[in-house]
Length: 132
Image (cartoon, rainbow, N blue to C red; front, side, top):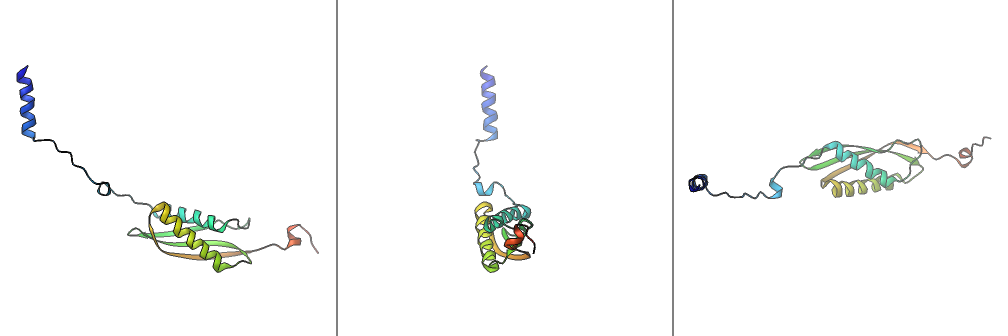
């Protein structure tokens, strides 16, 4: 039996010592987040910023272009009217940037907000179904 163990020992010597190579986490691979995922996060962030919208309004959505881990976002919104359109767009921009940075870890270079449609608030009498 000694010949078997010495043969195994000789084989280990021929291969050389085993060295464990430790690769830092940042060098093990890459994570790519699709543009459509960033668009979903941006759309949800816009919904959070806007709160309740008129029943006939379409939900906000985004189109996104990612280049070198930097996102350019275009938001499409429908708002109630009358409202402070500039303030509502500013709130959407801020919320979209915060959520994309926090959830995706991606820099946002631009958030362009496009208001597609304004939905007028119904008059008090019209809301109750009265006609004159």
